[in-house]
Length: 245
Ligand SMILES: [Fe+2]
Ligand SMILES: [Fe+2]
Image (cartoon, rainbow, N blue to C red; front, side, top):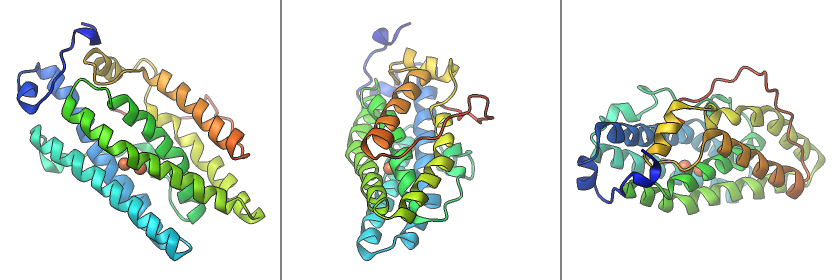
């Protein structure tokens, strides 16, 4: 069955009439977003409020943290309506993505995380914004302007840091250490999960297409627009590809 044959699922009542495989796939993706939005807010966004150097930066970081917790709340609420037990939507029960394993210590690192990881998230949300399950599609569309704000926040504060020599060096160093963690976020090439998501019209693109697009956009942003460098990715590097992608 191709994505074209998958009917549009406009409501929770429509959802109940779908096959078990469709329901399972939707629950998997909603659960993954609920877990990772919460974990990201806990390990990056909330601790970053203390790292922010000025009241203005703290204010905007509070807004970012509030929105990331808000994304968790929205995905969790949808998950509950789909019958996912609440405890399965916390990082205790379900392993979060590997991009959150980076030990956040500095403001420069946080700015780089928002610059690079939220760009990756934008690609995922763009893809979900046309998904066959409309409650999820609507949630993605609602989330999008906030994810764009987070990426812009990363770009603005990174550019601010780059005005001094030490700041620029700290940003480049954070990029060198964080960027190699990003490809795993898109999942494996020829992933069976991704194939099923596409068959059901939940996702539109293959993992490898998403990754190639991300690398192109990251290069444009970091190298062309900001005059910084992206480190070479070692294709032999041991990467734990994220499941559910
Ligand atoms: Fe988010
Ligand atoms: Fe975000």
